[in-house]
Image (cartoon, rainbow, N blue to C red; front, side, top):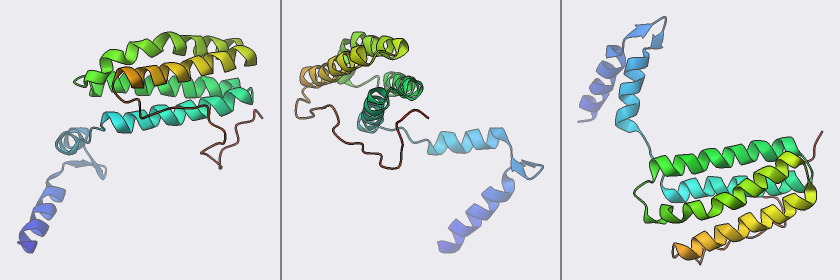
Length: 157
């Protein structure tokens, strides 16, 4: 059996069309289609949480460029959630956080620290409201007190 698996891998490897030493896009797409990993809602929410934390530290340091970047990243994760977790019942509550995210986007765009803090608190509260509505009230999000990213400088340079 061990030799069969090894032989299969050899045949597979040499059967890939190569152009200039590279596997063709068609073969890559075929391999990816058979081995595609699709994260679950929890993995996506870890991404949201990561960006939520980074937005706070960028904003309170008035690094508006980084705060905007992290907001864009958060929006990308939320879009991925809508695409990849459409079958999850919890998604019907997701729109409740959108007005708060809009407020946070506007505060970052205005580069207004006071507005930023208020919009961030509102966003955090709406995350918790969404958790409560979707029967995940045990998952409480707070304003971070310290960075989870000791290797990142959030100050504007």
